[in-house]
Length: 571
Image (cartoon, one colour):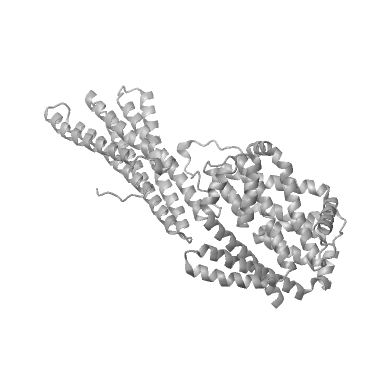
C-alpha cells in the first residue's frame, strides 16, 4: 500500500507540476500569445508552427486548443487557421514525452530543489511571482519524475509474477491486442485528464520490462484519442465553430491512428533503428532505450500525421462543417451568448477577451433595438385601422419586448461569467478591466430599458387610438432620435475598435447637443400647450419620448467612460 500511494503521489506531483508550469507561462505571456496567434497564422504552415511553439512553451496542448477555439469564437481566427494551430499543438505536446524520458533515465532531483528554492523567493517578491510559480511547478514536475522512477525500481514490476502474467495473457502478435491497449490508453487519458501522466505510467511499465514495447506504443496511440474526447465533451455546450474545431482535432487524431495501424510493426522497427543508430542508444540501459523509443514514436507519429493532413485542411474544414451544420435560430429567440463558451478552462486574459467580444455584441444589439423603436414610431403614425397594419405594429412591438428580455439575460450571464473570472488570481490591470466591463453591461442594459420605455409609450398611444403628433413634433422626434442614433453609432465604433484612436470628445459633444435640444423642446412644449397646438396629454407623451432619448444619451456616455477608463461624471 505504501508503494502504491508513493506511485499515485508521484503522478499527482507530475500532473500538478505540469499544470503549474502551464498556468504560470500563460499568465506571463497571455497578451503576447494572443498577438502571436493573430500574427503568425497567415497560412497553414505558419499556423502549425505557431501551434507547435506555443504548446511546447506552455506544455499543454489543451491550453493551446482552448485558446485557439476562443479566438475562433471571437472572430480572430478562421476555422481553417484554427485547424492548423491545433495540428501544431499535437506536435508541441510531444515535448513532454521527452522531458519524462529524460527524468526517468537520469537523476535530476537536485534541479527540483533548486527550482523550489528560487521559486519561493520570486513568489514572495511578488513582482516576479509568475516566474516563481513556473520554477516551483518545474520543481514539482522533476520531483514527481524522480519519485516515480524510484518507486518503479522498488516495485520491480519486471519480476512481479502477477503483472507479467497479465501482460503475457495477451498475444503480442495479435491485432486485437493492439486495439485493446489503444482503447485502454484512450480511456486512461480521459479518466486522469493528463496525457503526460499516462505517458509516465507507460514508460514505467515498459522500462521495467513488464509490458512489451508494442503494447506500450498502442497505449501512446490511445492517448492521442483520449485527449480529444475531453475537448469534444467540453465543446458540446459551446457554439458551432467551437464544436467544429474540437471535431477536427478528433478527426485527424483518429485518421492518424488508422493509417499507423496499417504499418504498425514496420513503423516501430524504423523508430527503434533511429533510436539505436541515430540517437546512439544501442548500448544504453534497456530502461533508457525504451523510454526514448516511446518518446521518438510519439513525436514521429504526430509530425508525419500533421505533414500528411496539412495539405487537406480545406477538405477537413468542409467535412466538419458538413457534420456540424449551423443552427438557423431566429436572432430574437436566441438568448445564448455567442463568444463566452461554457466548459472550457481559460486564462484570465482569454476570459477578458471573450467578455469584451460579448459586450461588443451586446452593444450592437442595443443599437438594433433602438432602430426598431424608430421603426415603431413610424408605424404608429398610420392609424388606418386596417388589420394588417395592426399586426405589423404588434409584431414589431413584440420583437422589442423580446430584445428587452435578451438585454436582461445578457447582463446577468456576462456578470456571472466575470464573477467567475474574478475568483482567479488576477493582476491589478485585469481587475480594473473587469470592474469597467461590469459597469459597461449595467449601462447597456439601461439603454435597453430606455428603448423599451419608449416602445411602451408609443404602444400606449397607438392602442388608445390617440391623435397623431403634429408635423413639427414628428420633425423634432426624428431629429432627437437622429442625435441619439449618432451617439450609439459612435459608441459602437469604440466597442469594435481601439480606444487609442477613439475621439471621446465627439461623444461628449453629441450628448451636449441632446441636452440642449431637450431643454429647448421642453420650453417650446409649454408654449405650444398654452397656445393649444395640442393637448396636455399629447405633450406629456411627446416629452416622455424626448426625455428617454436624453437618458439614453447619458447611458451611452457612461459606457464610453467605462471603456475609456475615465471617471464617471457627476449627474
